[in-house]
Amino acid sequence: MVHVIDSAAKTVEGADVPDSMERDIEARDAACDQPWSLRDLLSVPFRVEAGTVEVSAGRWLRRAAYPELPGCTAEAATIEEALKLLERRRIEIVVAMLRAGEHPPVPRPPLRDCDPQGVAEALDVAGLVAGLLDRTSLTNT
Image (cartoon, rainbow, N blue to C red):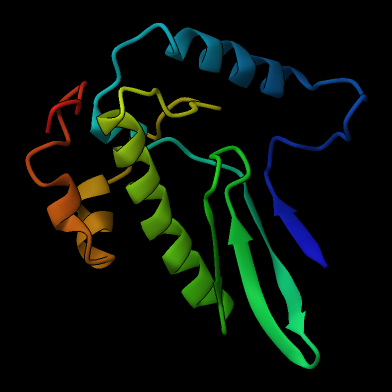
C-alpha cells in the first residue's frame, strides 16, 4: 500500500482543482522564469509517497519517492531510513541537474524556513553543496 502525503492534493485526477492547488501551479509556472539559487531549489517542497513493498517472497522494504522529481526514490528496511536516503537522493539529483544545465522541477515555491546547508550536513552530503548554495548556475563546476 502506498500513502500519498500532500496537504494540497485532496482531489483525484480529472476532478476539480482546488484554489490552493491552482495558486501552486501558477507559482510553479512563474518560478520557471526566475533564476533560482541552489539554496532556493533545495528548499522546494515535493510531494512524498511512501509505502511497504514486497521485493521478493517474504522480503519487504519501505519505499519512499518524490514523484515530482524524476528518478528520486529510495528503499530501506525502515521508513525513517528510506526518508533519509530519499532526502540525500533529492539533493544529489538537484545538484546533478543544475550541473547539466537543466532546471529541476519547481512544483511549488521554496519554503522560507528551510535550511539546506543543515540538511546536507545531517545527510553527509555537505561537500556536494559547499560554496554553491547561493549560485544560480552550476554548469562548469
